Image 1 (cartoon, rainbow, N blue to C red):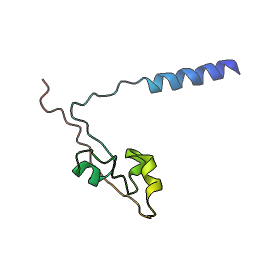
Image 2 (image 1 turned 180 degrees about the horizontal axis):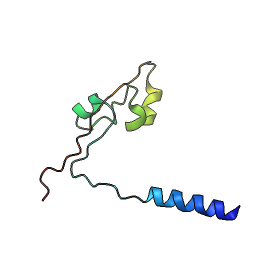
Image 3 (image 1 turned 30 degrees about the horizontal axis):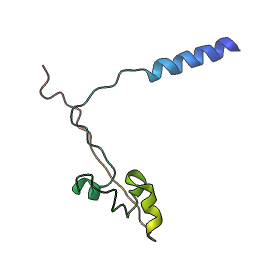
Length: 81
């Protein structure tokens, strides 16, 4: 039984240390309104994306809304030799 646990732990460890690609300009945030404000959304935080910016902002208002966002990642190698 311990060899199974060891093998499972080894497989999980090897799967999680896989290298990830470094990206120079990563700016992924929650909410298009917050992106439009340039990330200065902590003081406003009055919609469903408040959990990302300032969770205490959820207590300030009685609102019911949801967020659906779609973003397409462009993993390109522009400018690399």
